[in-house]
Image (cartoon, rainbow, N blue to C red; front, top):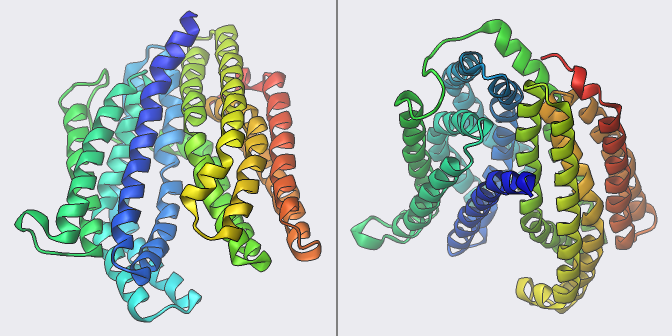
Length: 436
């Protein structure tokens, strides 16, 4: 019971944090939709490009967490502080380069997609406004990582509350011109995102340099240490980037079956994404506790936490599957008015209710292995299973069999095999001998 209490103390704030970010995302979509299809399309393109930035944050979040949690477990807060300081300095230095890169990327994507006119104009201006947020996004990522690495998941949650409040209020105020402000439309949504990131970024810096955290605030750089962090983070970073492009290609291929099938798959993945949040939070909490116990050389405790979290995730998704199956028709009706799409969506929700169960095992052991620094091994497993089982079987179903049901089968086989391989890798206990 004590372990469950500790896990819940870590996981609940992470879950709430994820839900708050989802609330921001849904509000942005709702407000942008009020300005027409061109606005939605333009903003969607920018968000797709910004997905690459989220992948790059792996270096500052997951990569840094492997080291900081282990140093915290060893009570070596000076070493942990050097990791944070090095990442923070790199974040500040690389901000200018990333701003230049993301000023060009949307234009490149628009060119290759052959998009011009109003959509291209909206996307270009929207992206230029968002450039201002990049330094603060990186700062938030580093200091959030520092907070959760010593077990403080509540403070990032409180800061997420501030971000959500500012973002949602400013979305309406700036987009629609409330409270005497000019009506900025879609660009008001971009500006509200920037302002919320700036405010929360400054709060993060206050907590770090105001000595509100158990680290030594400094701005220094250790080249060898950063190389070690990059070495650990690079496989996971590569996995995220490749998986994003692979999934984009795969889901887009579903269009060959018809727009109703594509819409249903897109919606069900969004629904399942919300359902996965507690599971991801438990897995994230597990990776923190796992890393801390490895650092303290408490290997048996580390194993117990991971196995317990795996069980919790499995039973949660088993219960969630039952709920999704029972309420599938009502959920489909809430998300679609098209009769055909509604029927396909109901089928999709029921199918993914079963598919998500092995995902509980997969994500629990994957987060643990990444938290220990075995990122090369998880990268290999994820890439092989993704391309052979999900993409390979799925494309056979789409192009040769013209079957939407085979897409479900591809997801199920992928998660089953990945879960088995991650479990086998964890059982080898090579994570006990990983040197970072």
